[in-house]
Image 1 (cartoon, helix red, strand yellow):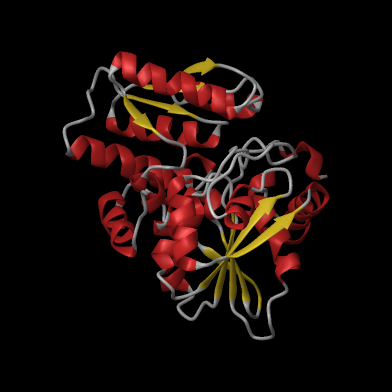
Image 2 (cartoon, helix red, strand yellow):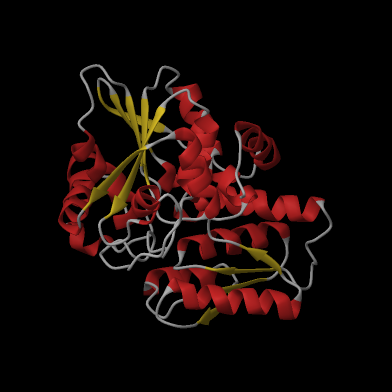
Amino acid sequence: MQTITAADVTTAATRTTGRVRRTPVLQVAPDLWLKLEFLQHTGTFKARGALNRQLAARERGELDPDRGVVAASGGNAGLAHAHAAAQLGVPATVFVPESAPVVKVRKLRDLGADVRLVGEQYAQAYEAAVAYADERGAVFCHAYDQPEVAAGAGTLALEVLQDVPDVDTVVVAVGGGGLFAGVAAGLDGAARVVAVEPTGAPTLHDALAAGEPVDVDVSGVAADSLGARRIGEIGFTVARRTNPVSLLVDDAAIVAARRDLWSRFRVVAEHGAAAAWAGLDAYHPADGERVVVVVCGANTDPADLG
């Protein structure tokens, strides 16, 4: 099975130097920080993995300047790969489910991507993207389950270790598992990882219980970004190796956490990113435990935040 290591994350950090933003940490309590990854290019951590994937493909001579790249995404990964393709001067075709938020589809087109709306869920858009890659020869860029994509995401963990060197715990939201895998690999045992999922898409939680990746039903307020049907192979193998704390949070907790981030810190987070903040209440850190919560994305409509 595919996996990644700390060395892969270090390689990704070297490869993407100068192309991704070093996002800050915000201390919000004596032993609590927010990693403000929503300030990354395209508004999410996924720009890191997209650039690492495409740069690596170019290094290997796989990236044709005319055929470009293709991706399937509920929105955020597509934005990241469209951004990376624009940076490298190649075309990007992005397949998204018809349920994708209008704001994300508009941003994809603003980045110059050829957007194809297919099916009601990510899995259908994914199948269409794979077929397109096979037919056209474009480089297929997975939303989360490719080593270079996951390792690129993990570069934010190296920044956390530099900015909060005595961190005990890092809390991340989990969808397909790319961010979790990258962070866990990048930390390489230096800190505990708390993996938070919505009850409506418990891909990692159910896989750990079953001993293997399994399909789950997808629903809930965070389904546009945490709506994978099954944990990726990389996420699962890294989880088996690193033994994270796996937590589930319901929609009410996610909605409340999103509003809390705004009201207390003026942080505009999408529901998927707010899931990590919701997980902090479910985790209950010990006294003196130094915790960093990754706020991983802000591609949302802030109109309902008040």
